[in-house]
Image 1 (cartoon, one colour):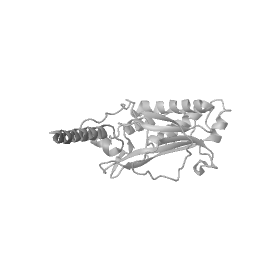
Image 2 (tube, rainbow, N blue to C red):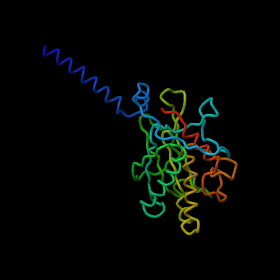
Image 3 (cartoon, helix red, strand yellow):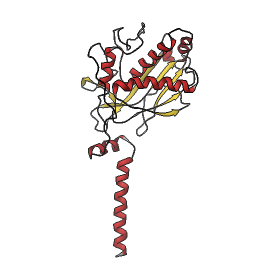
Image 4 (spheres, rainbow, N blue to C red):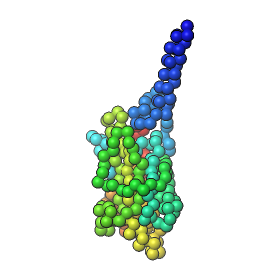
Length: 250
């Protein structure tokens, strides 16, 4: 009798452990399983309603589906960290500056951004490989062209994301990425009358790349590859952000 009770307890404990692993376990496969069996999360936000018009483009589209952009998982927060070295003001000012930019992007995409703290990690734009099971937070930082060659010339910032196959394997979604802002440009903007507004516009442009927007040929959009005075997202930019907020849950 005691032996049967012990065997029964082992089965009960095993079942409880299995449920706990499925419920809270990390990883894309377990997240997908939770949604399949009806215990997964819902979308964290809803894309905004915006006036149609303008032009936009995407950094990547789904294989074989040129009208469907690669996007972030809207059922999971986009985790990010900041290296404030070289940023505007002190570390807290840099954090506030980034948070305000991400709030604007979240407003239109419905994506949610989760700050995980400061870091001493430096940008590595030549490295795109994302190991299985390892999803580094998005890195937002400042650097000079001496450290990041992509900032050479008149480049005020760079941004982008890395896509991998979803658990089902038939579509892509972004899992990490980065934004690197040119420290020298931001130093120069400190002395400009509209410097704060232009700094924000640079950040928004690169955050647009982070969530999946590409460049366009229209100077009426903030995602034009050269800033001619535009300080906020244009109508086409907003429509692109809304599309990117409507991605699939992994």
